[in-house]
Amino acid sequence: MYGPYLALGTAACWMVSALAFENASRRVGSVPVNLLRLLVAFALLMLLNSYRFGQPLPLSATTTQWNYLLLSGLLGFFVGDLALFRAFVVLGARVSTLLMCLAPPIAAVTEWLWLGNPITALQVAGMMVTLAGVAWVVFEKPAPEDGREGARVTSAPHVEFESEARLGGAGTTVLEYEAMPIANATDHRRITPFAIFLGVVAAVGQGVGLVCTKVAMSAPPHLDAFAATQIRIIAGIVTFSGLVVLSGRLGDCRNALKDRKAMLLLSIGAITGPFLGVSMLNKAVELIPSGVAQTITSLVPVLIIPVSIFILKERVKWQAIIGALVAVAGVAMLVM
Image (cartoon, rainbow, N blue to C red; front, side, top):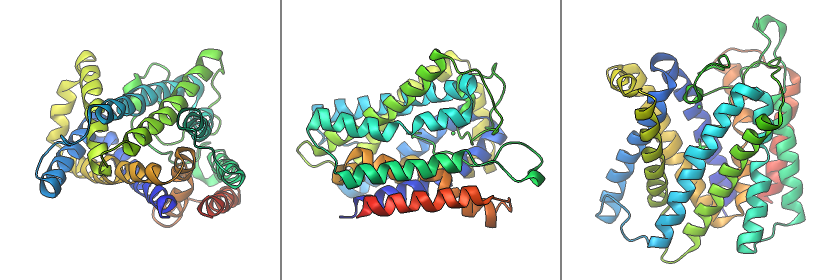
């Protein structure tokens, strides 16, 4: 069964897309990046599906499949992301990321209650070990010569996402957190019930959204993973377009289209994120439990460590390396 390897491939793709979206957002802002990445991915999916199936849209999907995938896109791309970005502001990035570790068990419990698919004791143990390793990496403090308090460990987009600009002040708008890396280790913000609620909503959006995808993928007729991604993206485009219009950021999107380097970075992120990464995740949840798949995709902060060391030339302490090894051991248990 190659489901775990597809989920691992998703995490690798999301690592690349996170770096691409972060740098694109620095040039043109995260609002246009957030919307344009979905539009680019949607255009690529239209071309691919036209070539493979002779139609630009997955018209062969049933109404039930469309409904569940649109709901999945709404929960993952929109509700989950918005709650997560706001949680970064009021709660701090590290605690928010830790709360996102609730997404895999939420997905597992939802799938069990909804579809009656239990997970084994070994899978539960593997999930716990993996998430413990990821949490250890997230809370790693940088070396003193970094010149700042926070470690530059990038979290997965969700997201899409499911699914991404540095952590700003509390007055920054929600949309300014696309392509967001993990913020300062000493980013102590007030932990309130509402802040915790936001983090939980983000985890629920990602976890339940993924199970909605599994329901659609499991229903007859068989639905291609790329076609499923295209339907999910439609929900994301519609909701985020409305938000961009209401926030008066259409001008930023037009300016972003004129920046060639930003568009190149954005396109790389769109290919490795919504186009390939999400599609592989869709296929993965068709083959393995949703909670297991989402646990493996949580490895993005771990996978980015070699990039930080060898490409970004940043110093990573042993705590992060040990956490990475623990997370990899947990994934090995899941693959077994």
